[in-house]
Length: 217
Ligand SMILES: C[S@@+](CC[C@H](N)C(=O)[O-])C[C@H]1O[C@@H](n2cnc3c(N)ncnc32)[C@H](O)[C@@H]1O
Image 1 (tube, rainbow, N blue to C red):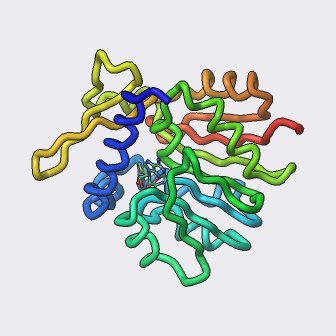
Image 2 (cartoon, protein in one colour):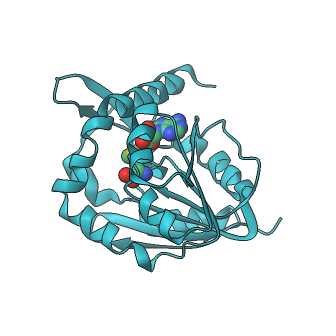
Image 3 (cartoon, helix red, strand yellow):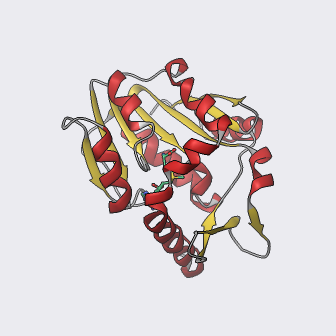
């Protein structure tokens, strides 16, 4: 383990704990994100669903409407508390670190929004292998994230070993957060090289939407 990367990931977790109360404001003010979430029904979600990094549950409540069962994972208790208030009691919430947590069963859909960009590049191959192990053989990963156009609104840090941005909270505190703005074509090529059958497309200017089927074991 790289200690400087571990420290960055700890700072990222701390940022989201501190930001949880204000997180939904992003959805209120960012029109492109609202338009994106309104396109939820286009996504191939179904069966037993696992959501990684559920945050305040903006997507969780929509996933719940389509899933046979839904499990949602996040590291931040503060995020989970808000997410829990948005859905019925049948959604299972797990507080865990996605980099080490492994489920006891397999899922038909593994969904993650605004999570892929927070994974250090060196950890991506292991992350995708872990997602493959979470899926049933004919299951799929469905993911949403920001593409490089979204970097215009961030304070991109130079000189960090892992791509990162600086985020500030209203109280003035600042946190480094891992941020990799994935290009749709490059990501699709990377997934293909890892044995996935994937389509990744741009959406609402600043986002990507991906659907990926795991390699045959
Ligand atoms: C950008 S938010 C995305 C929330 C939600 N998926 C959405 O799209 O609105 C990133 C989430 O990742 C969670 N997170 C950060 N590091 C994590 C880790 N190591 N394990 C699990 N969750 C983590 C944060 O607590 C936060 O809720």
